[in-house]
Image 1 (cartoon, rainbow, N blue to C red):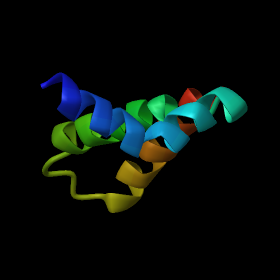
Image 2: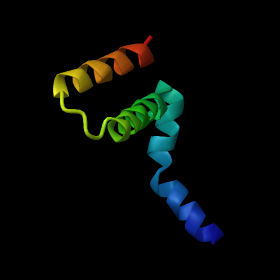
Image 3: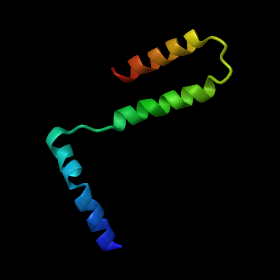
Length: 65
């Protein structure tokens, strides 16, 4: 099990170390995607797609502040 973990680490070594050079994370993007998915579930049955687009735009502009 430890050997498998070491192999996985060595395969991803460049990407892991790149984080410390650039400090870029996909966390905020994943959070926004999760909010959009939640809103889609709540919006099931909306007749007006334009209203849904406005709600998404509002959600995205709030999360980028």
